[in-house]
Length: 142
Image (tube, rainbow, N blue to C red; front, top):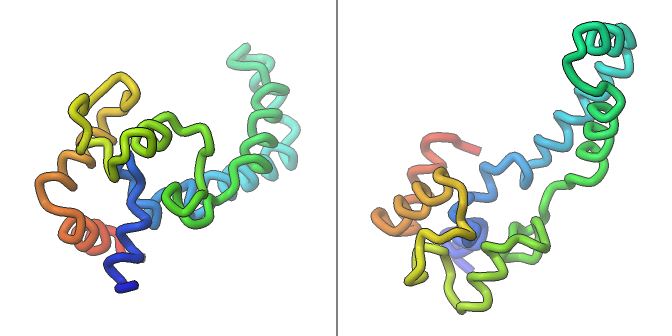
């Protein structure tokens, strides 16, 4: 498998380039762990939040704990079986036998609710996958 073919497998059905994705790299999980550590170290933050009636501090901590444990890096990207198992975009593309959402006659549709995803997919369609990958790597080298 060529380098391009390997990289093309890291472009999700919805147009996310896994290599630059915060889920894929583990950045979301790691950031939640870091913030959780800071929050636990600074108990006065609960007092601040409670006094300001800004939000439910206990639920905030529960959310950070959940993200720091449950949101793991998706090994292999969605094409390789990683990522969110219940992703409606992945399921739809697989059912329709297409590689990307933009190949569908219904593109963009209600399932693809994120304007950034639609923009990325339109770029891939316009530029071609190989050129798009090269551009992404030039903008944000690994």
